[in-house]
Length: 98
Image (cartoon, rainbow, N blue to C red; front, side):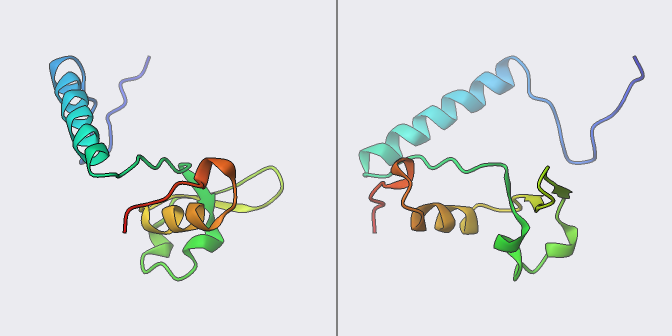
């Protein structure tokens, strides 16, 4: 197999480093939960239209789905979280702290 390097700024975390990140993440989630916050997980891919006014939209990774719809890898979480909270799907009906 040809040796392929990761792009600059990216890394693989293995063993103790990955475990430390898991422990820290768990501790943070536990503290946030105590304050009434809940975890939100949005899809990695979103419709490009969601980011139409995004300042760096020309730098987003784009692809087309089987129906010809333009998708992007979400560049941040703000708009996907807002989109998820306005949809009436049962999984998104969570009361967020204000």
